[in-house]
Image (cartoon, rainbow, N blue to C red):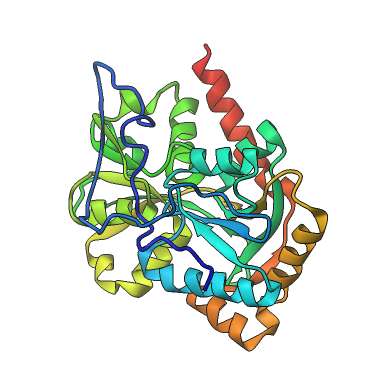
Amino acid sequence: MYTVFARRFFVVLFGCCLLVACNDQGETVRVDLDKRVPSKITEKPVATAAQIALGIGSMITPKEGYIYYQRLVDYLEKRLATPVMAIDRGSYEEFNRLLKVGELDVAFVCGGPYVEGKDDFGLELLVVPETLSGETVYYSYTIVPARSPAKSFADLRGKHFAFTDPMSNSGKLVPEYLLAKQGETPEIFFGKLSYTSAHDKSIHAVAAGEVDGAAVDSLIYEYLLRREPQLAKKIRILERSAPYGIPPVVVRPNIPPQLRERLRTVLLAMHQDPEGVLILQGMMLRRFVAADDAAYGTIREMRDFVKNRSKR
């Protein structure tokens, strides 16, 4: 088997360099909730000409769903008759860097890094997943411990709050945008900020009382509650955002057109293949469908608003 796969998906790589700067009114720290075995990822994640480099990151993949993404890699290898090297580099910023320089061919990312990559270096949409309910949108959930006295987002002022990744839409941009509209910044509004590197880590941090609240991906939240129903007694949704374009599958600029079309064709046809259906069901997806950049317009607008607000 040619697949080179990480033994765990939750590698916190950006704890030292990607945290938001502290100020007098808030402290930014990193939450490390587990003691998992170090990842056995290749030192130099560059595919050969005869390989496809696929990025599947800890930010978007709960550990419970790892086996299905591993099966997806095997599935793609068989259908494309080409070795697929799966890579996790722990942050969306690093994924975008690898896509920009051509060291990743295709990747599962969030709407935030897609928008950044599209505008920065021409990152391209390939397909998007469709949920079991037939939707191609998702939400940012603000969650708190079940016993939290908070009744609205405003009640989290001065509290310890968790973001996932600095480029995450649901895990950072959405609450940052809400605060920017009120003339606030996360560093001033919250008493302490943490980056967890993954939505499931943020959810477990809230459940364990490690933080007072977190912003998380609704898809991963619903996935975890199905897998770990006991979490429903430990956390609750404080607020739900407007819908946003679902985290897409993207390809690097200048990817050979033939490879792009082969990848798109295989993914779009997965739901018509019994083996593909089993993998999709495990990922809690109905199928992959065509993508449209317009679906990410609201994310782009929020990002621009936050950037312009910070310049004032």
